[in-house]
Image 1: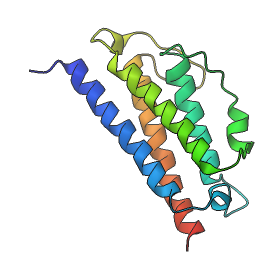
Image 2: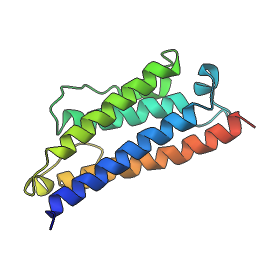
Image 3: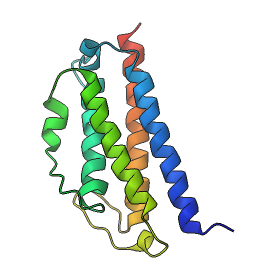
Image 4: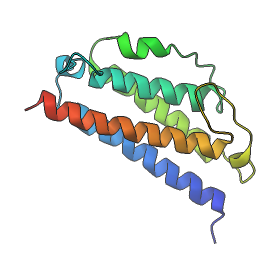
Length: 152
């Protein structure tokens, strides 16, 4: 029987891979201009949501678990418009790869290690991986809506 730690990690890995693939599929329906377009005066562009998810993963898992040294500038995630979508998507892919690499290193004891970061209500590593997965999935829902609005 497979250890519970392996089951948890492999399921998280599968979901993070799926989420990244889904973002690419959705972004493929948009031009570079549409990627940065806000269809309404409120809310975010698809591109800014990608920057935000990337920053979230790089900060909460990359910097605080994997020790990447990433320094987050959350405000810029919502204001930057760095250009073509492909480099932005590549940065998301790199963040997902960091998450997956860190997941694959978690031992049975690691899941319950204390975790403390401003802006979270979680207290262990399992909690932050779950929180980041839910956050990513939430923003995919917003991206679906934006694609529908921008391509109708």
